[in-house]
Length: 285
Image (cartoon, rainbow, N blue to C red; front, side, top):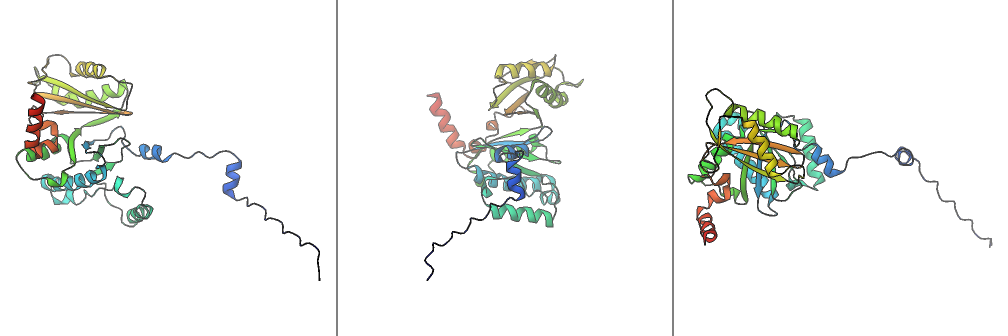
């Protein structure tokens, strides 16, 4: 019998595949998931609709708004356009579902479709959503139509977690130049024509996750862009200028004098006026 100790087999040499060589060599840069999502998010030149919702109801609200927007696209622009309105953007519903993501990509490859009318963009801020839109959707008139129907009692129960809708006519980078360029583009049709003199206007701003701008600075720059011959009137305005700044982008739109009457385009308040009235009464007390 052989009583000599058995020799231990040598451990296999580590594999040096292309991936490990890349690791040992020059470090390969990869974009973090959040930054990658932002990179394909809101960009200068986009047009769309901001929306807010109840806490932890973002995914449900995105789905509800998608259905509501498709319904109104059919109503306002015809069934042929509404058929293209199926939203194919990122939503919170399929976050983390790898199989769903793969299936979505394969479906897009097999059956290329036209750009949708509405594409949701994931936000890193709670209770906040954004839908990119394309022609023929005009965000201001589109949102106003939805809110006007809600004020007239048209039932929109599917959007019970949705709060405010804010249409955006133009978007640029959140810089002084970007703000000035957006203001010039958005305000010119309303204030700079020969027949558009002596208009009363007000400016309302919303600044989220941005430390470069202050409310006063934004209002001053936008007021300068409005130009001479017009008057500021915070209560009885003819036109209201909405300025939305979020992280590194800024957007703007001009809405009509019925904005406050339509509860600042807040679907929750329009769909439940009794609750709104009770809140108002409590505040007055």
